[in-house]
Length: 445
Image 1 (tube, rainbow, N blue to C red):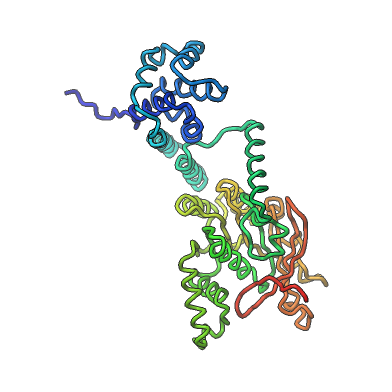
Image 2 (cartoon, helix red, strand yellow):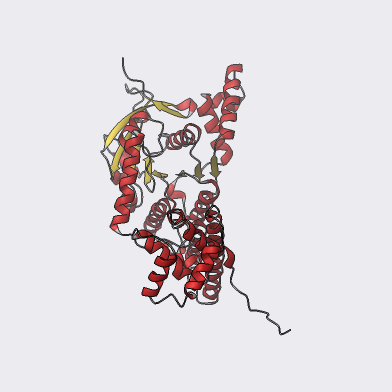
């Protein structure tokens, strides 16, 4: 036999494609189920693409899908003979006894299409590798993005008509109305703050900024544990300054209401040990994922977030803190450009993965020179781009750090300095430094 080395037929399944089309002819209502999973381009056979596209168009026009209407549609579009004529349509309608397995057939067609897309993308990447790649970091990020798109659905969505977008927006508004809940995003766990923000919204970039020793890390860890423990939202925390073990100790002290200094000395009461064990069990069962890679690059960050989203359906991401991240080689030489690139990419990842990202940031020393040391947006260190990219910018201010005799002992002010879709406000919280814990401020009697 002559050698066929090097000649390969792309992955496909003719039986599944025919069975899928036959199922639709038996029960046209299955188009609603399948059209959200399978595109015409997912079919390997061009004839099957034409037939499927005709079925979807007939359904969208509110017309019946049967041998007569389908043949007429294909004949009018001069595709009937190309697909095999009326006899082939008859064959499709008789190949399956029922439409019960239409979802299974669609899954097979979709998976085969994904494999073909992988092959096409991989071949394209190989060719590009042999070419002139100037920025390897950007190339690798683009390569991962293209492969990630295939794993999510196959191909990135194209443009949408306003009719589609408005319809989806109305459905979301209607769902919120019937749900009758004020909190529409991931709640922070702080009642007054959630009242203003309605929770952390999908695709939003939220910046939490403060001078050192104000409790930035503790504040975000409290929000992390609330999301994962109370709302059962899978969460990821990138710590560029503290190790995973240090983070775990902080969370245990906070959840167990244990004084850190007593824990370090091993000088705890039986009651505190009991609370520590309970906190250990709760946190161990939570879907919290930690990454303590120091000076992580924005490209590595994007890569890890994509994998975490695909594997664990991460619902919120935290970064501690923004200025410790690294940009790409393109931004080297200018720290301001590098921070701008990092900020822009954080927002892009939030939008791509459709999750809120909460990033901590340092403030410049200018705030120390003022009589009123409450931070402002202009105090953000190294880049005005952070202000542009962020949907919400919050500051933590504790008066006792600067004025030990203040009347606001143990009080932290959460100052919302930017709120793209809401009001500016200040929320007071109780701060327990020994427990590294923020709590709602009890209302005055």
